Length: 96
Image 1: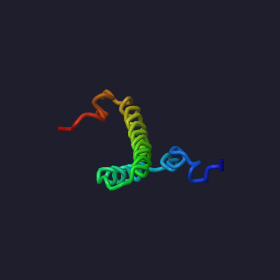
Image 2 (image 1 turned 180 degrees about the vertical axis):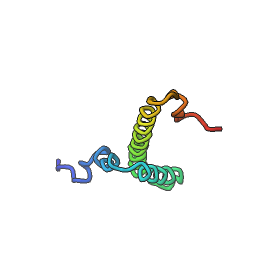
Image 3 (image 1 turned 90 degrees about the vertical axis):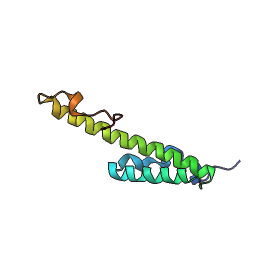
Image 4 (image 1 turned 60 degrees about the horizontal axis):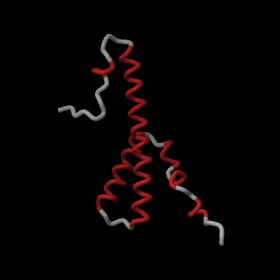
């Protein structure tokens, strides 16, 4: 039995290690691209799985940025008279 090649030894977490350093806009742009490619349905199964894993990592990165921004806004709003509930809208709410 031979040792795995370098490409085989890289796991999904390693392949997506760069995601942790992406700014929000870049992570979101890449996530949109991943979703478009997956929705097109023209990707072989193995590549689709890798894209899905990258999409999950990108979505988590975007959520982390949004959570941090929400916490920072809440901290600033906490110094005023407005409650944090009204100052920071719920991520799942629609504005209409």
